[in-house]
Length: 220
Ligand code: HEC
Ligand code: HEC
Ligand code: HEC
Ligand code: HEC
Image 1 (tube, rainbow, N blue to C red):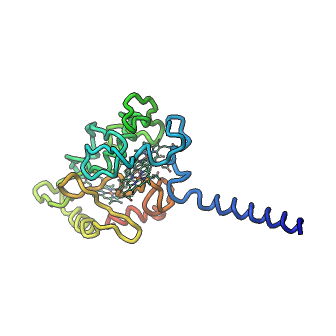
Image 2 (image 1 turned 180 degrees about the vertical axis):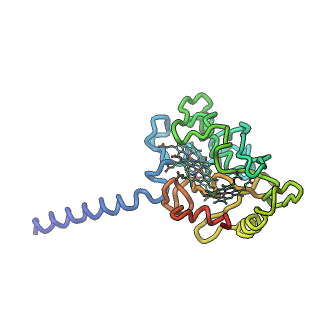
Image 3 (image 1 turned 45 degrees about the vertical axis):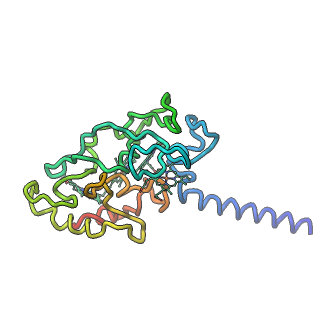
C-alpha cells in the first residue's frame, strides 16, 4: 500500500510538472511581460503593477486601462507609408512606448520617477519608428478617407476592408485602434496582445505563419 502511494505520488508529481510546463506560457505568466522576477521590480513579485494599479491610476490618457505609469510624451518619426506620415499615434501605442521607446525607465511606475532600468536590445524601438510598420492616424486610410492626399487607388480596398472589420473578432483581434477621439489607426495592439493571451510568439494576436496576420489586414 505504501509502495502504491509512493507511485501515485510520483505520478501526480509528473502530471503536475507536465501540466505546469504546458500552461506556463499561456497568458502573461512566464511571458516576456512577466516582470515578477525582474531586478527593477520592487513590488515583491507583482506581475500587473509595472503597468496597472487598482487605485490612483494615471489619467493623462483618458480611457487608459488603470495605467500605473506616466505615459510617454515623446514625438515620433513614423514610417511614411506610401508618402504619408502619421500625424498622431494611437493611445495604446503610447502606453507601449512608455517602455519601448527608451525614454522612460521601466521602474518608473507607481509614482516613482527616479528609475534607471532602461529597455535594451531588440525590444528597444526608439523614437524613430521610420523603419517599423506604420502606426498612427494617416489621412490615406484612417476613418475619413482623404482623396486629395491619396497616393493612388491601392489603399482604397484595404482601407474599406480594415475599417469594416474594426471590431473585436472571435480571436479578439481589433485591427484598428482609437486615436484620441478621432479616427481609428493601426497601433502596436493591432498586432500584439501585451498579456500573451493567445500564446503566440512575439505576443501576437494570432500566428503569423504563412503571413496570416499580415493578410488579416492586407488584401493581397
Ligand atoms: C507590460 C505592460 C502590461 C502588463 C504587465 C499587464 N498589462 Fe494589462 N494592459 C496593458 C495594455 C497596454 C493594455 C491596453 C491594451 C488594449 O487595449 O488592447 C492593457 C489592458 C488590460 C485590460 C483591459 C483590456 C483588455 O485587454 O482586457 C485588463 C483587464 C488588463 N490589462 C489586466 C491586466 C492584469 C490583470 C495584469 C497582470 C496579471 C496585466 N494586465 C498586466 C499592459 C499590461
Ligand atoms: C513596463 C515596460 C513595458 C511596457 C509598458 C510594454 N513592454 Fe513590451 N517588453 C518590455 C520588455 C522589458 C521586453 C523585453 C523582455 C525580454 O527581453 O526579456 C518586452 C518585450 C516585448 C515584446 C517581445 C516579445 C517576444 O516574445 O519576443 C513585444 C512584442 C512587446 N514587448 C510588445 C509590447 C506592446 C505591444 C506593448 C503595449 C501594448 C508593450 N510591449 C508594453 C517592456 C514593456
Ligand atoms: C503590423 C503589425 C505590427 C505592428 C503594428 C507592431 N508590430 Fe511589433 N511585431 C510584429 C511582428 C509580426 C513581429 C515578429 C517579427 C519577426 O517575426 O521578426 C513583431 C515583433 C516585435 C518585437 C520583438 C522584436 C524582437 O526582435 O525581439 C517587439 C519588441 C515589438 N514587435 C514591439 C512593437 C511595438 C512597441 C509596437 C508599436 C510601436 C509594434 N511592435 C507594432 C508586428 C507588429
Ligand atoms: C492591423 C492591420 C494591419 C496589419 C495586421 C498589417 N498591416 Fe501593413 N499596413 C496597414 C496599414 C493601414 C498600412 C498603411 C499605413 C499608411 O499608409 O500610413 C500598412 C502599410 C504597409 C506597408 C506599406 C509601407 C509603405 O512604405 O508604403 C507594407 C509593406 C506593409 N504594411 C506590410 C505589412 C506586413 C508585412 C504585415 C505583417 C507582418 C502587415 N503589414 C500587417 C495595416 C496592417
